[in-house]
Image (cartoon, rainbow, N blue to C red; front, side, top):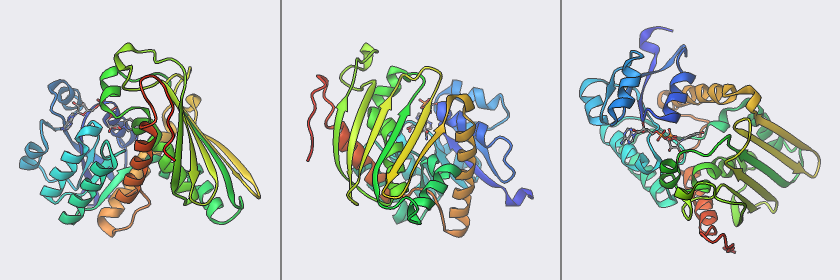
Length: 318
Ligand SMILES: NC(=O)c1ccc[n+]([C@@H]2O[C@H](COP(=O)([O-])OP(=O)(O)OC[C@H]3O[C@@H](n4cnc5c(N)ncnc54)[C@H](O)[C@@H]3O)[C@@H](O)[C@H]2O)c1
């Protein structure tokens, strides 16, 4: 691969997820993170020490460099403004999930990107996990028959800091969006109905009333099946995710995120996702999520979140 073929990303947000992307693309042959933006000096120092130029804002970056696209990994509440900054500069943008705190925010980001004519992809990395892609093909090919039930679980090793939890929209907007996107993408069905049951204590007093440590959502799908989404922030050993699909002909269970494998599955998927984004920019086709997906997923998350109250009372929205 020659230097001119390289796809050069600017990473916007050098926190937890930003560093995952940096590691995932560190040795990539064609897609590289060449610049970093972060308003916090300590975050910039950490990447400049590793040899990457870092800037306090997108405007400062663009005064000095011409990346091929932005990879937005700033906090969710900043996604809309950063997509708008990319649109203003005519730069393609790959935005971390969920692309805004609510469906209206994601829709507005999509509208701004479309008006500017920039490619806009939302980073749901599970769409680039080979096991899940094969399961999706099996479902689309009818091998499982009619989908009756999907059970999807995501339990993290430990809760993130209170400041992150109170600013990220809560468990459904932060975590559940992965499962909502995965269920729509795997089955090709929309999420019609959402009924939620929060469970157990909230261990961090600083987030009480703003987030829960675990919640279960029962979904009604447009094809007539149902799905269960189980989310939790305490899984001893590390982050895990599983999905099981029951159809009229067959069923399949995948434990695609296993603490024993560490971050290997996610890093490989993040690299494939970045390659896909480069293809989107250069050839106009993508296997990734777009604004319609982001809005539908955030709408399900909004309906689920509305059923969580500080007193853990349950309200259904049917
Ligand atoms: N796909 C996944 O599996 C996954 C996992 C974790 C987080 N995320 C997403 O990544 C995003 C960031 O989460 P995180 O855990 O890394 O948060 P974080 O708080 O660890 O990091 C965010 C970073 O963004 C920087 N920042 C703040 N405002 C900025 C701005 N205007 N421009 C540039 N940088 C800015 C902060 O200084 C910080 O360094 C969230 O939207 C989250 O939903 C995705």
